[in-house]
Image 1 (cartoon, one colour):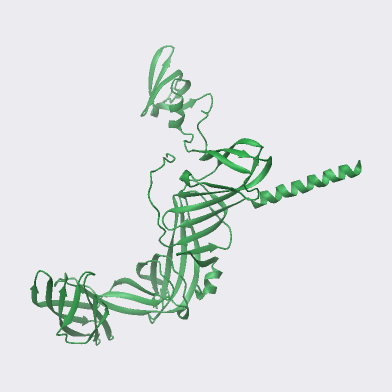
Image 2 (cartoon, rainbow, N blue to C red):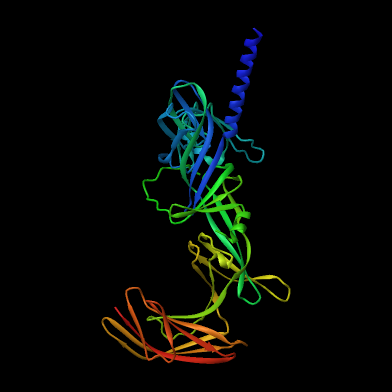
Length: 466
């Protein structure tokens, strides 16, 4: 007898250990995309009895796409299947409750004023339209505005209302057991973006770059101690009928790893995985550093005066200030950079404080590609452009330009004059007063050197055909 008891106790201990281990394996994981969209993987322990079961899977995102749900058991493949699924998103609210209590008895407490403590109205709710409640009492009909209602007493909660978004499943199980199940679904209302901070050095020839991820969760659910992945890239999604929702890579690769994210190519996109769990609350904006400050990124500051066939003499023309750097390992970078805004700062030598000097957006940028930031316009470089000859035809445009660039700085500068045409046009330059280069099929670039506090002029004929 003692041996039997010992064996039974041992089996009970094993069973408890397995149950505890299964509970430990419960988890939540979320993969968030740039375009306000995410994939949620929710792993929970669910109790099943042999035969048909009704299972409530609550705490799902309010903005879930119910057609995207994928259900899998972790260990008992094929033994448990979903026969039907309903998504209940009609949550308990003032409006939802009263709509379901039409033609039922209600007790309404109205607001008082001064010495008036209010009144009690008991009767059958005939209608609830807009803000008007019509109640049939023993004394007749009572019409009450919602603004006058202090409290309403109802007998019970209607069966088809839920307190939180819930998936209701009809499940067939070939066994009676506690199973670890993973439910995967997509949801709207949560997205992420990247923001970068660049600090320009005193000589304006290098920057220190850091990056932050901002996650904005308005999906209608919280994700506690979640495993977080971010996907950067242009993932195609097609639009379909809307479902009603609830009312209401060495970066300095070592530096990148130290920030807590691991980056890798994933199909045609790039994936960034946080190497720790983190909680994302509903209606929360969370920021996580994903690029540790990386100094000594060689940067070139250039000035560019851009023109096209539609450019005519005008006051207020500006010369653009740009910062350019290479996204390479040799330049302390060399990682796929997700799209986002780069804010540029520079220290004031007088007090060491950081001052904002401009910002620009970058698109998704692969490694070994150049990044060019247009951060503002040059204050002390003034362009003046004249058109001395012009001729137009059905398929051509011919202009002769004279351009004077005045440098009011105390040091010499180089300004690039870029003459651009559209993609369906052809560009040729003639009678140029200085040399130029075609940096692509649509852009001719003149390199103009200007001494300190002086001016320089160029002229050329631009011919555009289409």
